[in-house]
Amino acid sequence: MNDKILVGVLISAKRMKRLREDILDRSLKLILEANRTVGTRLFFFALENVDFKTKMIQGWSILEDAWVRCSFPYPQAIYLRSTYSRGNRQLLSAFFRQLERQQTVFINYPLRMDKWEMYKCLASHPGLEQFVPLTWPIRSPEEIKELLESNPVLYLKACLSGRGKKVMRVADLNTGEYYFTRYAEGLKTGKMHWGALLQEIEAFFNQSKIIAQKEIDLLKVAGCNVDFRAELYRSDGNLPKIIGIPVRIGQPGSPITTHSVSMSLENFCAQYSLVDYDTFTKKAEEFLTETYIALESCFGESGELGIDFGLDTEGQLWFIEGNSHSAKVSLYNSYADDILLQSYQGLLAYAQYRVSVYSSIKN
Image (cartoon, rainbow, N blue to C red):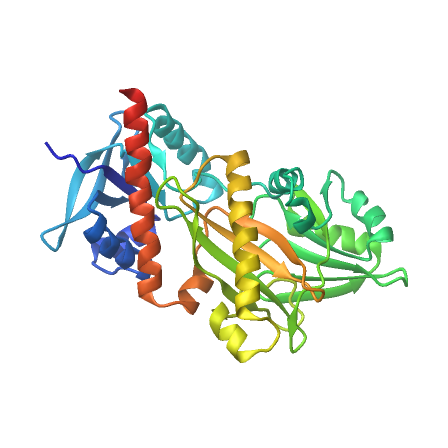
């Protein structure tokens, strides 16, 4: 009897097609390499490969250094390496419900975390409220105008979004006009009266639930915002571990640091005399570990999490957002494979740990 746990990796249909052609991106290669050490029964599949009636999956795995297609039962653990379009969300939710009923372990969160829920979680957590910028839920766009009267610069964010796609910076110029910047297929800016800005906001967010946040006076390099994307993971029931902390330097005038220059924290500290590496690392590790655990207390345990955070000109750390489905772009651009490999080995070991915990509870 094969006592190795069965782990499924959910990827997009496009990546599935490339995998069948033996064209693997860096992350999938690292997952395969990590599994040679950990030793799970690992297979890859897309949502289109799932048979909801029989609860079987037509997936692909490596057998004697060759890709083979096999029929698999629903896995004991699943790792989500793809987000799906709005049209597939209902199907994806139905699949997740079936997995939950058979107590499949989700290595990472099945759904994106809501930014307003994250804010409430951390703001109510003793010791973390000081790291969260003032945040307001927006029920009507007219509320934004009222907030701008006492907060001349606001960041507007869709509660469910990633990669900076639904972020807008709005400033009250005190001239009867407002200035906005956003990044979506390039940087867009505009100066206009409230009525026109209101139309811009409504068109951009398209009825998405949004929040407003007070602007953080972030550290800057040549006038460009600097922030940090920490990637953390679990390998067992102990504290989460940090893979690395990439530093992102935004484009001139951009409200976000996505689509930016990124480098490791070590290289950033060596290149710029803005942050002392040892002092910052110690402070950041404490903040990140506590933040990770606090978010788990609200959203449930997870094997990995990306955390965006900033440092202001006064040396204060600020939580920006958590990322349950991090593409790890900055991490891959900043760190070598041997660092990344450790995290995937940890995640697969975490799957084994969680499955063994569930098994012991059942028995």
